[in-house]
Structure formats: structure tokens, C-alpha cells
Length: 227
Image (tube, rainbow, N blue to C red; front, side):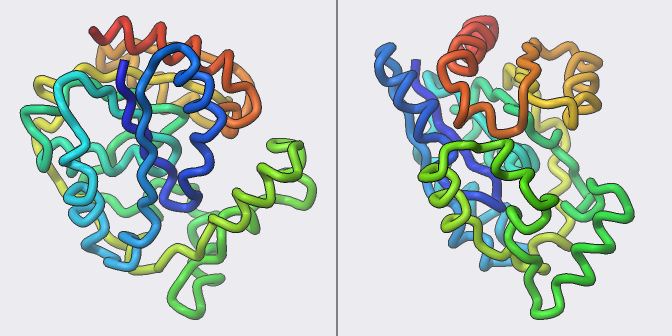
């Protein structure tokens, strides 16, 4: 199998390192491009990221998106069609056409981040968490230091930009959802409501880094169901 991994816009490509290593030992090919520079395009980030990676997609590739990268999928489908055949949402937002990333948040959290974006950018994702929470999610100090170093401030122009409204993006695309944490219960329920194949791995949002063997097994099962 061949996987194209898209990291959260608020993190970096190292989030895929452990999972990629496990899959490589099982004979899979993996790609995990760095998408962070494209966020500087603000409202144009969706199109810019799609243009950056569409050449990496072929009919044998399963695209896997984590967290906020879920909103990128319709733009990628438009850029890569008809080559994009399979997508797995890994504890990821469902596509939100016409709505901004801020619109996907609970109102209180959105207002807190807007207020913190005084210099035009929201603070890096690790600072959104309560004290000690990141250490619980990611106990390995070296991996945690890399994640923090890669987590850059997200431009408010990107966070406020409505995601492109691309009708019928999922036609011809086999979609699946792999839930890692309780926070994404609504998303996996929505996926099931659309008839997508689903898997549940009840740990936490960064389990792709801390439990890569188990996540790899679930991902391979789900990708197999997508054909």
C-alpha cells in the first residue's frame, strides 16, 4: 500500500514519523510532506496546499488526514481528480465547505483564540492545552520537543477563511474514518451517517505517535475495506 499523510495545519510532519516507520517495516510506502509554509497564503492556503501535493496522488495512493487537515480534502480532490480514489480521516475534522476553521470550534474556544491572535496569528497549538496535558498525550520528551518546535503560529487569515465550497467532492472517492479520541465522536458519527467505513481506537489524539503499531493495524484494516 502507498499512503500520503497530511499533518494538521497546526503541527508538522514529524507527527507521522512513528506510524510511517511501522508501515515501512510492513512493506508500505509513505509520504509526509511539510505543509506549514502554505499557511502563509492565508485564505489561499487550501488551494496552495492542494497544488503542492496533488502530483503525489495516484490511483494506488490512500490519502490520510489528521486533525484540522480534514478540511483540505475537497480542495485536494478538485486538484487531483480523477486520481484521488481513497481517503482516511484520522481523528480529523470533516470537510466544512463555506465555513472557516474558527466556525468548527465551540464558540468560547474560538473567541479565546481570536483574542489571542493580536499579532495576526493564533498562538501555537501546544499552548492551547492545559498545563501538563501535552505531557500526558505525548510522554516521550524527544518527540514532544520536536512537535513543539514544529508547531508554528497559524495566521488568522487562514483560520478565518471559509473553506472552498466544492460540491460533490466525495463522488468517486472511497472515504473512511479512524477515530482516535472521544473528542471526535461527532465526526465519526457523521461519517457513519454517510455510509463511510469506520474504525475506532479509543485512546487520544496523538496515538499515531504513541501507539503506532495499533494505529497502523487499524489503518491497514480500514484502507483494505476502501479497496
